[in-house]
Amino acid sequence: MKIGNVDLGEKPLFLAPMEDVTDASFRYICKEFGADMMYTEFVSSDGLIRDAKKSLAKLVTYAEEKPIGIQIYGHIPDAMGEAAKMAENAVEIAGGAGADIIDINFGCPVSKIAGRGAGSGMMRFPDKMVEITKSVVESVKLPVTVKTRLGWDDDSKIIVELAERLQDVGIQALTVHGRTRCQMYKGEADWTLIGKIKENPRMHIPIIGNGDITDAMGAKEAFDKYGVDGIMIGRATYGRPWIFKEIKHYLSTGEFMQPLSVLEKVELAKKHFNKSVSVKGDRVGVLEMRRHLSNYFKCLPDFKETRLKLVTENDPAQVLNLLDFVAQRWG
Image (cartoon, rainbow, N blue to C red):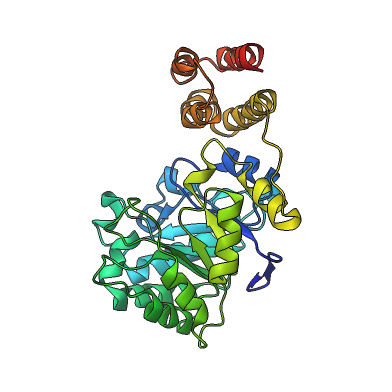
């Protein structure tokens, strides 16, 4: 599968862009476990144009992450075009290794974004969605991709027709989450319409499916049943970045990978934690690791007290000591 000149091989696995999750430290870990393509946390077009510090910081990527996309969101065509140019020039603006792809977020369902007409809020305005996409495509030389949903609600699942329109204005890959905006993350993802996009003889760009891929068997079924070119994984990576390796092992051998031991998880958590602190500094690095540390060990028996300490401790050295205790007590 190729996106422009970016060759991702056969049946690639994508790490979904997730706010406050897919920072550089988490991307580093997921890449080690076989994620073929990753994205930054989504970046506000308005924030980029205003030179907001937080938005500019999200443009920073690293050579070991490549290929990587910068994902932007917004609801004004001209502003999105300007933001795309800034993302394309990320190296000059923010440093780092830059982007290989510009991705447009038409999929985020949270109210503070969709309520403003951005993210999946744009599903109510497909003409404007196409206009924004055209503006971004015409503003940059890098390949442009889109991530979106089935529609706004059950009465407006427009994705099959919309996919053609987005392709016609120049996107080079499309990722579809198998829910509507109104579903948020409730119920089950419906991949039926994702399969319909692949069946459309007019479609020639790669289609990436997303939603409820939580294990290797589910990934294989998605490839086999719906014919998608790639799979994007989001929430199932929480505390389990090795899911990419599990899936690849199963797809290549037909066998399940041996589960990670507690000791292996502790060493992984330490590596992730140290990377987070090195990238974000002690205070922010510790704070942003808390959800990950909790998830790495959520199945351990009698872990409640230790978990509470892990998610409240502010001293990096003490967090590492707690991880050593986890290894001694449960390893």
